Length: 274
Image 1 (cartoon, rainbow, N blue to C red):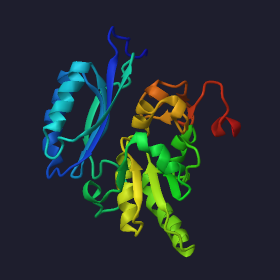
Image 2 (cartoon, one colour):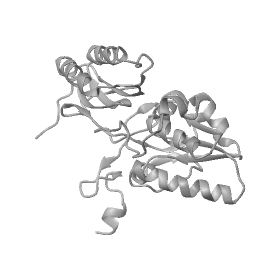
Image 3 (cartoon, helix red, strand yellow):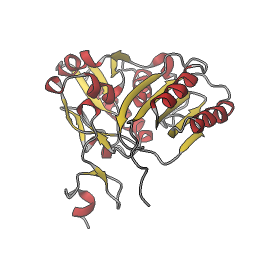
């Protein structure tokens, strides 16, 4: 079965999240789903008591209508949205799901809306991570890190975000044993995981914690390639698979056997072990 046919105007892709207080996320679900379907918007949105997260795509006017609706929800006026353009619809249908968390870490009691680390704008990120007193941590999973990251970043080697707290506990214990209290900078795809990871770090006694505002996607959008410290591509969770500077789609595809992002014809662990 062939994919959706290209349209005359490019589709707008909106990656969004907001930590907010939704006492009854189920009541938000159906009106939001109905609006997305009416505006021919597709993708996935996750709702939880802690807020909203997801990526959607559709006509520019339809996306604008959906974003306006989400901004009207409690505490969502400052919704974080990153936009991109694509010639093909990257999603097959629209899903709005109610979950326990909008990004699963598995630790109750964190309040990212109030206790996350200090935001650093993309324009100021290079100076922070070039500081030798800064430890840089990539909070994404290993399969994402494999196709691109910032030079010198620590890769926790996690298979899921729920494994990050255990890794960080061991990392923080090692720092304490060395008597070190460095600045810690964290980054992720769009910024949402770092809201929780920096809140977790602060809860574990790391005082000076920073994270990249808008994540890798905003950095790739705003920082000129000639000035960029990013190496490789950034994995995204739609049919674009990965994007590079300027949010241009890369040449990665998903391996049908293991789901890893690979370049066509290029070697990777799955094929090398086959």
